[in-house]
Amino acid sequence: MKEENENQYIKGRGAQINTPNPFETHERIKEKGQWKDKDELESLKDTQYINTHPKSVVNKVTSPDVGMEYSLNPYQGCEHGCIYCYARNSHTYWGYSAGIEFEQKILIKENAPELLKKKITSRNWNPVPIMLSGNTDCYQPAEKKYELTRRILEMLWKHKHPVWIITKNQLITRDIDILQKMAKKNLVKVSMSITTLDESLRAKMEPRTATGKNRIKTVDKLSAAGIPVNIMMAPIIPSINDKEIFDIAKKTSAAGASSFNYTMVRLNGAISELFNDWIYKCYPDKAQRVLHQIESCHGGSLNDSQFGRRMKGDGNIAEVIKQQVKMAREKYFSGRSMPEYNLSLFQKNENNQLSLFSCNQ
Image (tube, rainbow, N blue to C red; front, side, top):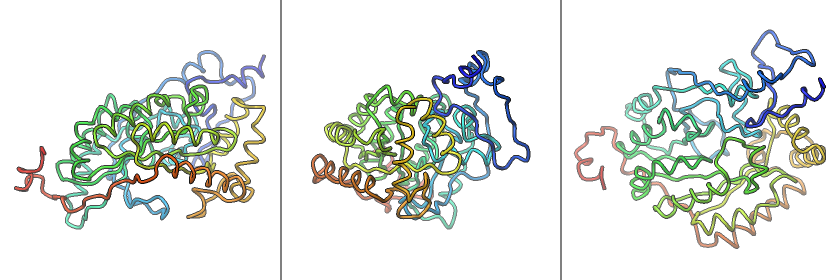
C-alpha cells in the first residue's frame, strides 16, 4: 500500500516530484511512505500566484543559437507543466524547485510593462525584436487574470517596436486586435508550439496547455487575420512524438502556417531527473528505450550544451528526424516563409507626431 502511494500519479501536473534546489544548504527529504496522502495530493494541484516587482525584465540572450538578442518574461514559472521544459531550472534562482513548484508557484512581474517602456525609451536602445517569452509562456493561465502580456503588446504597438511571441495557448487570440495592426506593419511574428495531436499524450506531457486541436484552430485564426505563424515542434522526443511530424506539418500548413521548425529534446539540469520519474510512471514499458534513444542523440548523454548542436542533436536517430522534417517542409511549406521585420517605424517617444497618422492604421 505504501508503494502504491509512492507511485501515485498527480493528474494535472507534468512533474510528479520536487527536485532539490541546488542553492539550498539543506535538503528536505521525505521518508518513504510519508509522501502524498490524499490531502497532499490535492494541495499539489493548487496554483499560487506570487506578486513581484523586479528591477528589470528585458534580458540579453547570450545563447547564439536562439535567434533573438533579447527576451521578456512577464511570468516566472509556468502552470502549463510541460515535463521537458528547459526553463524549469531557472526557478531554482528564485528559491523554488524545478519540479512541481515550477508549475505551482507562479511569480507575477506586476511592473513588467513599465519596465519595458523604460528600457525601449532609454537613450542607448536601438530597435531589435524582443522575444516574448523565451523562458515561460506569456499566455499561460495567469495571463487571463493579470493581462500583463496584453499591456506589454499595447506598449510595443505605441512605440512601433518589433516582437516575436512564442506560446502554446489559444488565449493569444484574445489579442488579435493588437497583433493584426502590428502584423500590417511587419512588427510581429508568432511561433505556435505544437508537440502532439494525441490528446492522451498531451494530457500527461503538457497537462495544462491548450489541446492540439485548439492550437490548430489558433493557427487558423491568426493566419486568417494576417498574422504570420511559425510552427515549433519543440521538442521532438524519440518514440514519443516523432511519428507525428508529417501529421502536424500537414494540418498546420492547411491552417495557414508560414513555416515549420523543430528542436530535439535535451534534458538539462534537473529536467533529466524529472523526466526519468515521469516516463517510468506514464510509459513504463518503453521508458528505458526512450531514454537510450535520447542519449544516442546527444553523444551518450541526456543533455548537450554545445551551441549549434544541442538543438538538433546528432547520430542516426537525430539524422532521421532531420530528414523527416526536411521532407515535411518540402511537401507542405514549399514557397512559404516568415516576413522580415520592419525596424524603421520605431518611435522612442510615443507622442511623436508620426503616431497621429500611424497608430490606428
